[in-house]
Amino acid sequence: MSRALDKDVVASLKAVKPLAAYQAISELLLASPNGGLLELEILPKTHQLPEGQFVLQDGCAAGVSKLGLVQAFLVARQMLRGHLDEAAPQSVDELFSVTAVMLFMDPENLTAANTRKRLLQSRITAEPEKTYVILQTEKLFLDSLLTSRLHRHTKSPTLWGHRRWLLQLFVAEGFPVDVLADITTVVFVAGERHPRNYYAWCHARYLVGLETGDSNDRVVTAVKQWSFKHHTDISGWSFLYFLLGSKASSGTAAGCSTLIEVVELASSLHLANESVWVFLRTLAASGLVGEEEYFWFLSAGQALLETSRAPTDQRVLRSAMQWCETYRVEA
Image 1 (cartoon, rainbow, N blue to C red):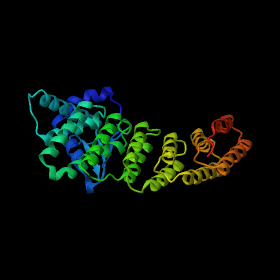
Image 2: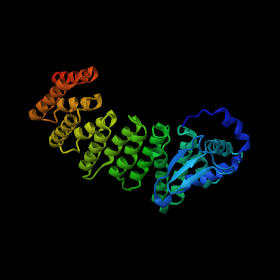
Image 3: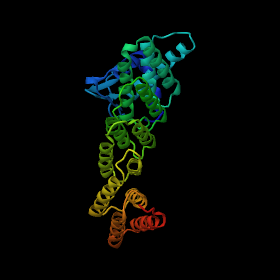
Image 4: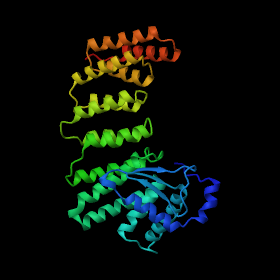
């Protein structure tokens, strides 16, 4: 969602009741239907809500009036400023509502994000027996923003950084982090909402570093399936290569089987896009595959090159094979 306001939106601001908009949107953000994530969306101009209504909700899916959100943000910002200046102190619960609205409108608002950090720490200190519930509630709120159809939120360094900080609290308090679930339900969705999502996939690397169990093979399988479905997204392939080369992976066996699977996929679908072949050339040149897989890669590339008629595809295939022959490491 763009920060810019249309002229008609600016002209309409005076007609909206700011406090009512703030209350409606803050209540939405604090709700968690059935303990799941909210799927938030800013309603387009073509979908006008009745006067006095700012939220349209159906289960976990909710559309919010842009005009109402702007008004709610202005109220929230004023309340937070008054609290920080000690002119109008707010309760902890109210501050959670205030900062939630601010981050919904502006995911890069560091003041709101850092205020939430202080609020979480103070609440945990005051109610240590509720630590897990407090952390889980914040996680649900964050993940709702990161996975919703909100263009700027899915690739927000501030929100991803806040999530990493939150997971560090989980670990410090001794609570488990479900790495596979976080990757499949948060990173994958954010990657779909915003292709080549650098911050989401960096977060996935952080999650893998938290893994202490034996689920790495399941993560590899899940990432492989995601990459097959989004074969033009280099970020997924890059993360898959990272997993295969990590110490936790099952070694060269995983690399060999993966290369064969991807080569078969590329051959059957006649894929010659750069994302797939950069992954293949890098894997084939690494020490994670043997001679048989290396020649399999070369044969598939040559076969596609002979049948391809697109100059761009030919360039990608030639470049991949030449690069691999130049930089290959013996297994």
